[in-house]
Amino acid sequence: MPFRHLHAILVAAGIAVAAAACTPPTTMHVEGTRIRLGGDGLTVELRNADGDRALIGADGTLAVDGKDVAVTPAQAALLREYHGELAQLREAALAIAGQGAALGGKAVSEAIKGILKGDPDGIEQRVDAEAEKIEQEAEKIEARAEALKLTQRRLAQELPQLRSLLPGDFDPIAAATVDDGGD
Image (tube, rainbow, N blue to C red; front, side, top):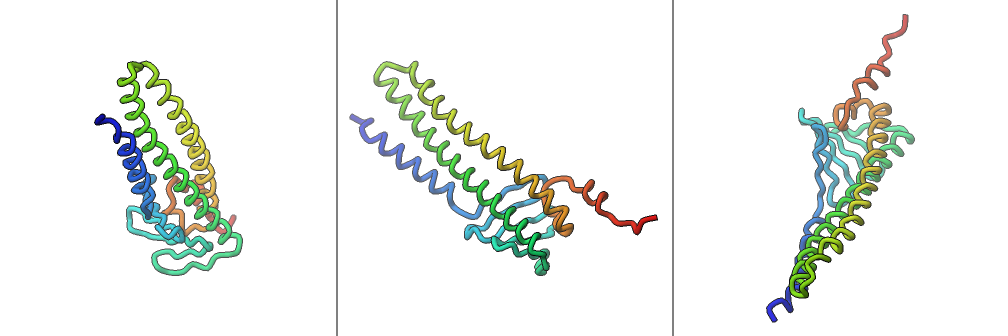
């Protein structure tokens, strides 16, 4: 029967798509900032539209425009936290991408089985159940993204040289932290 090998082909295609999704490095464009997590997982690169660049190491080191920046232990801990949150966000997104690819293969497989068995009505129900699981994982990513925004805000407060490189509007922070010498 010609459909006998279809399942094996769909599984192989799903694995290939998932493997391709895991190919590092990962680059995200957020609010005018390019965030790149290196394939080695050791460096986060931030680059804005003006070409300014910062490198954040997994160990909490910081370089801005090619120059090492001295950071306090608390700032280094915050940089490590930011780096770790980005890495976790990337891993979660890649996992969802793999699940999505697998769902696509399952949908095709279920459609063919439903047609061959004369039960096309059950296809949507079976596929929707799997899609719901993926949606729940996506909601977890949204929560992680909110935590990441808070960390970015703390970084902007602690390390003013990163304000122009982090996604978001930090003008209120800059205005609040300017010391005009007092009256």
